[in-house]
Length: 394
Ligand SMILES: O=C[C@H](O)COP(=O)(O)O
Image (cartoon, rainbow, N blue to C red; front, side, top):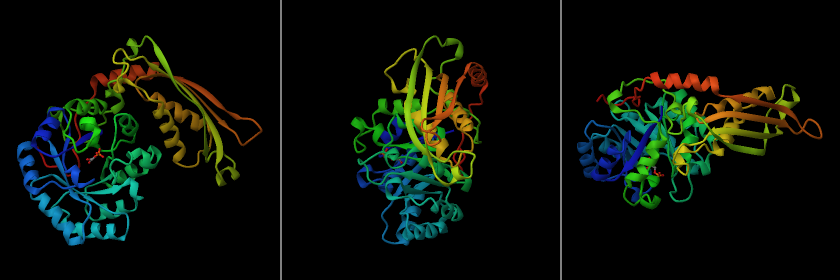
């Protein structure tokens, strides 16, 4: 289950975020950079106002002259009562040094190390963070206004970050000028939370004040779990079942077609030994029939984007060598079909380097049975919300 984090600068914005159902209140001064810290007094005031209604994180900064400065900033911020302290880290020897120094606070301060997608992040630092007692790691962008997270790392490149965090026992967060269309693309990676500031503000200006309508748009795109149903444990709730675009199978009357045609990507594929040594060109043609939205057809929240098809292809081919083209085409069809608004998919995958032409496989999959199963599960699903690891009890 993925939670929604919203960065706020004052008590009024925190209240607006709470009203909109944000899961994590994040304290930050956007005018001071990607991880600009709020004044300690302002942070303490927001913590007192929020009380135990939501978990609170806070940015401590990302420019420290010395390790001692980073440690003191984290300690000061923790003293305001926030649950998590986020520290920006460079992906070099200095960053590693800061992680080791901050490790002295493990047990006293719940630390989240922030790496930057636009600064060639070193994912090996995740293991060091875990070893030093950090509770989480986040990928953000350092240079605001110069591109979104997905401009620097596509979903296939982000998957190892989330997977490695999970493997190391770190909660994972993704942020970086995220916009509404990014949300359905990132949810399949199952990060613990997605973080937002700019897209929640008037005119997308992260230094302007929060716009409740913009917060509601993002909130609706992330499956929401009510506080009253909080249990504190992990849940098997499937985000795909909770999306606003979900249409019960018995209500689907008309469909629209979304497609990706003639996408050619080099892939490691084939059962022969020589096919392991180098990539070969593979062409993808995917036609997806989706349930037509019953209303708000111009609303991002009701859209199944072709990006999701391309992302599925990139994630599956990005995992490494695939023995059989049959496996590849089936995994793509299954992945696409797992989105609740998808009714059927025709997936055609062709190898282009085998003959002077193409060889391949085409399959069709429909969701009638699966949809019925999903529908039942939706009705009885346990709506318990997860808590972030190491969070205070409410
Ligand atoms: O921690 C999350 C950040 O505040 C995200 O800010 P941004 O959406 O403006 O990049």
